[in-house]
Length: 252
Image (cartoon, rainbow, N blue to C red; front, top):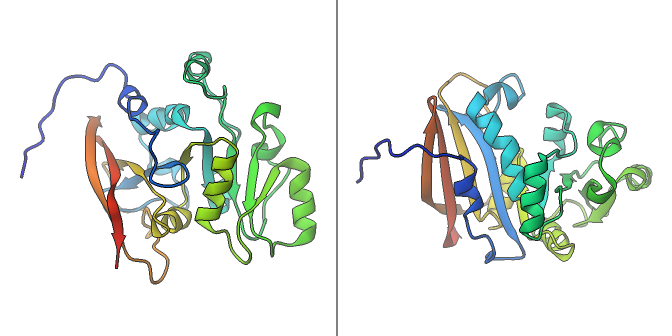
């Protein structure tokens, strides 16, 4: 056992995340989950994640999008959190250009039912060079599919449900090598069960008493997945943990 003690001040909290080598994913692309939880594991307050996030976490959450080729989110998170297209600072856009990435990562929304407001900001205000992607399944309502194709690039990834591996292969084929998943808990659980989560960046807010909803909801029958703690940071009582999946880290 080791005692973790406070160390040197980190000049830029994003830099340790930028320095991670994500060029060797275990599967189609590198998948990073970025989540926040209370001390009791709750992942929302009154249905919203934003109320759980502290000021240091909110700042890092926005800036973390700089690492991604695409930002992946479940439909329920889009509905509850009022997602908009990704906006990065001019400096971040230039750093991405120097790293060989597009200036702005597109959003990819996962939805089996396509029960979404296609006039909402995440679709209507997306830049032409970062058009929103909509990942769904072949059994989706044909009328909703037609409406979706008017405002987004539609990806079919599965027959009756969205299959995580198929979805990620489709993203990788489009050149999205680093996928940043911002939730929700059920979609994150699907990724973990499919052994597709390479990295988890988890912020722990210093509070308890939120909704009875965990960071990740494991699908029935899924095995355990194991992760290794790689780094820790702290600011104003908020703990920032970074884990990576162990090789062969999923088992019964």
